[in-house]
Length: 140
Image 1 (spheres, one colour):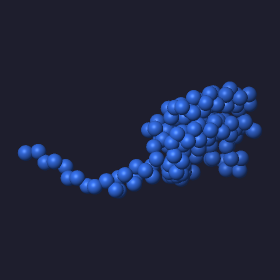
Image 2 (image 1 turned 60 degrees about the horizontal axis):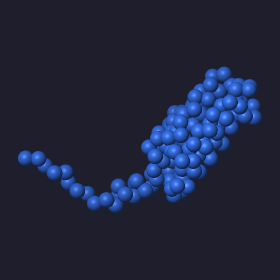
Image 3 (image 1 turned 90 degrees about the vertical axis):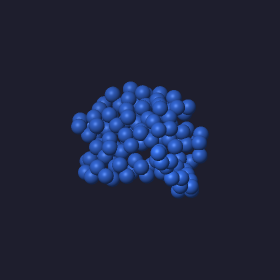
Image 4 (image 1 turned 45 degrees about the vertical axis):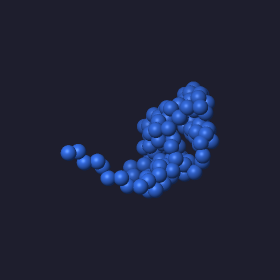
């Protein structure tokens, strides 16, 4: 499994989410991570442990309605769950054996963006391109 593709997917997720204005972006991402927390419920292979995990991520998602940090925490929790599934459970996509491994690479990219405050990456690039260049002051 390539490591590059999951990283690119995480970056693409952040770029696409940048199209949603704040505060809707944060709230939408809280809903997304809440759904991700339930991704393994229908056959994840870790039995009854799937339920408390889903409840924990749902709690973080709820707190994430008002906090990017909680959304980031939920994505990191999901990363750990992906690793467990890759090693002991069933893959997140049943017909793609390494899908949980790929998800475990992708999720921290999204988490880092969330811990950064979920900024509009498109807006950051636009600001960088349109900002006039000012040369650094030279000390004498």
